[in-house]
Length: 401
Image (cartoon, rainbow, N blue to C red; front, side, top):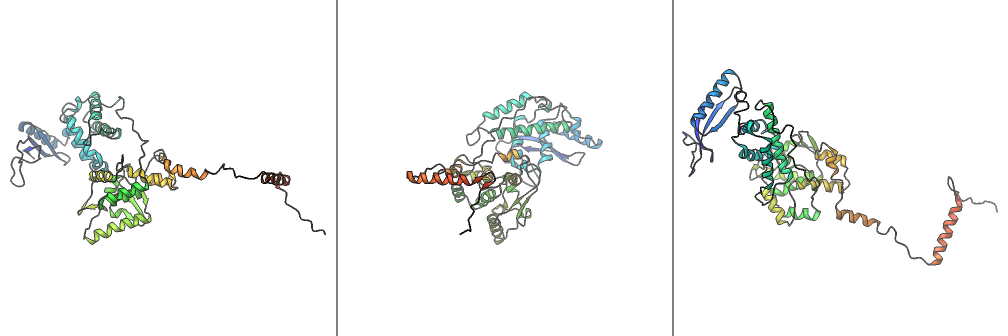
């Protein structure tokens, strides 16, 4: 257990017997308490004064001796949002969704609520945060989508629900209030045509091209792709255990996908790379870091309004247009409800136009002479005379001479 002076900008101490120290021109100092609590968990907290850090350290030592949680002792009035965030991160950082988006959201909400006491955070504060985020432009000069905002609201709601379960507060500020989630436009189904797919693959660097190819042949989510390991592939199936809804599923491997996976494995073998991950870059497994490269490839290909997740839409749309069933697609995509899959039961305008051309000559009238029309009419009348209730009367040939 100890208290040390630490710069919160570079996360390095003022002095150290071993390792690097802070080199910032204008360091922002805090006093970090570093203790192990009653459950054996390491706890680090920063304070503006050394006195405050020492006092907190003493509280942890006393709580540990009594076999109690310091959070229970501080319930309500003293627990800060940052403390809740640290507990939340420790509990859920193993989830695929943590690296996918929760980590970024936690950093953003910590900046917004930070050292504010949980008991002082109201529904109005949360609503103002959501409204402010609506108007905040991203680095690309665009405003956050409803889906992005809803993920942030979802994380905040989950955090406060956990705070209640962990006895940090008595009631969540969300309880009994109107939902802060925005209505999402789930009707968006942007997918690539075959020509666009060819252009995109041609503009992707090699490591990204393989990711895109596998995505187009499987419909896997981004996090599932980056977490894909060789042990998840057996026979003619990909077996996913870490999924968005925590339900395992199997994805069939077609002939082309098998060739792509063999090509990746062969290249890793040739360079002596022994990686458990399927997708690597310069010897390291690829995490959620292809957004910039993918955006650049899309731009170079001259493709508009297309995001990485739309590769999943592309797979699903082409699967249906080639005669695949909704039931099978639901299993491949891992949708809990078939309603989610039903939005793929459509055809593109171009595809529908080409198919409807099959009926173009349905009502075409063949040009016939008046005599030919009369003969066809008499033939039809003769056939009518042979018709009975049970069908047509067979023609009987007489054998008498």
